[in-house]
Image (cartoon, rainbow, N blue to C red; front, side):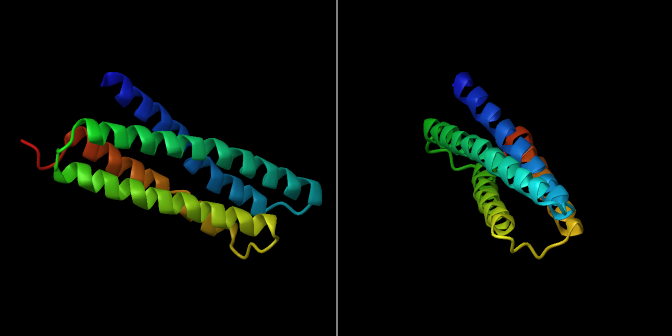
Length: 139
């Protein structure tokens, strides 16, 4: 069971690294004016998205495996953690949508916007770690 937890954490760290870095790349992408630089950022974002998608898949896969291993655990903290993980999947795919906007030259958002959304994963991370470690509502 500890190996499953370790794998879950390793993939989560990989996923979060990408979630923290991709919006930062968007900030720099917004500020790029030359065509080679623009193409370079598209390439960097695409590669990063692939790696972070592997992290997402591993996190969700091992998380589901852990949940099934502890079944029928119906703790509220675990359900809240699962809901946050699903919301993070939505955020992940929203980043894909934004990335495609850059690829198609349709970005209409500012660097400031991307700096703001760069803080979203930190909020998720705090909530997820508190739920996993503190397990609120558990005696």
